[in-house]
Image (cartoon, rainbow, N blue to C red; front, side, top):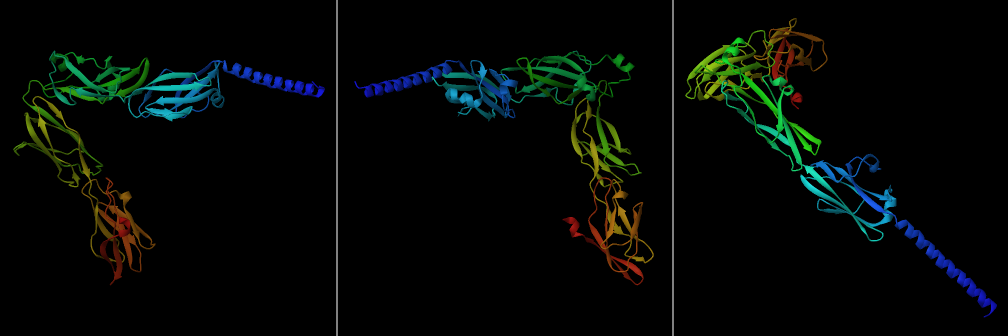
Length: 466
């Protein structure tokens, strides 16, 4: 072997050794980095949360959501217990796959909502660099919207025997309580509707049966000591329920029912009572209303007729039990006030309370000149008529088609307009009543002839109609 060849072999050996050592060194570093334990967690957080979710939230095996509640799903990886940044974590696995709601998603985080209630499995499967599969599952419970509605006694029931010892069953219907939830119902009751929610009378599972033990009123002697006579009056009981839905020990939601009421029937009498509350809207007339109430039976015979002079009142009418009673109501004097008639059945021994009857004025004022010609030194005089809520003086608008000095006075339906013009002009007048009805947009032509102001019109102002 020549010296030169020996040197070449030595150099080659050194190079090979370096290559082998270099390869061994790389292999050693790779093994060390991959012998750590790679773990994953599923985080489900509100949609607006970004960044390091593991700092403020915890991974859960069970999550409760509402229908269409948008949330963010994020995979968080740990190596030897230390949380990895998302970009670093990606170098430690080959693939990532979510299975949720019939979909497959291969990105570390995403937003999702569930359109239907039910139980869902959220599965996260990750294949690491060695080909091993990490798999975790979070159970998602999507809640049905819950509600509660009262059903019995029906609202307004008025046949409760005040002195009977029979129980009165309180019934309601609950929807939206899922199999993984349970609901408690707190019952409230009072003789005052406005105070009902401060008077709890009991609490129970929402699917239990509940009743009030009769009799629901004291005996006659005690009632008489309070001035209560059940032959011409009734006692009303208001009730409602608040349902609380729990998921485990956590309050998921609360729902409040509407308020129902039932009342006692009359005793020691052969008649029933029909109560009709009446209210006039925006009534400002000095003259009191002249309300006529006529009650007619199914055959058209008049059973009763009363007259009221109050703008807010409740009129009580005694009637025998019958079906198809029609009540007609009219305002005799202020005939712009109108309301509808109604038909109702009258049960035996009952106090029947109907909804408030509202008299409303929906007719605007009318404006008309008291004559067509006026002396030059006299005002133009108009009449503004309103047989309802009355003209609102502050809402009378008067102007001319050109700037001119003018003023007006209004009193007891009479409008006087003072002005000074020397050429033909238009006068525009519009008025509103206290109910907000506005008169038609009209104008008159004003010309001077033979020493008088002459009015021509009225004409519709089309610009105000647009």
